[in-house]
Length: 108
Image (cartoon, rainbow, N blue to C red; front, side):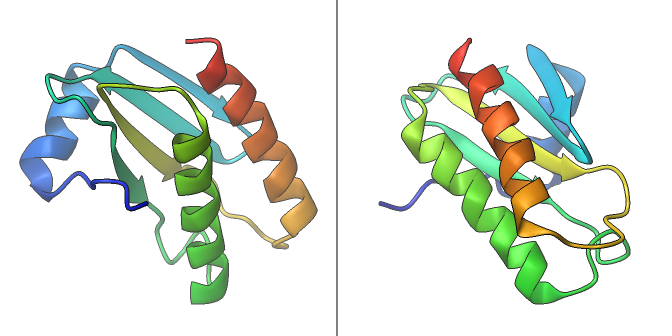
């Protein structure tokens, strides 16, 4: 099942300016905003200077989308950002951070 994406600067700016809640785990920050649509849309911001390899950036994107699909979020816009450089990419650490994020998302 494909998750709709936030498209364009306007959508992202709307989430950043009018966010309902945000939380972080490790280098990851998730920002959530209630929307008028019946589905949850995602946006992912990963700078190349923070995560060098495309393989690792794609892994992070897949994990975030997986969390959103498993969660019971309805009518939200969700943005994932990487705020700090990940020096040594370790899938176990990333999984641990995403488990933490998932538990925070489920509390909403």
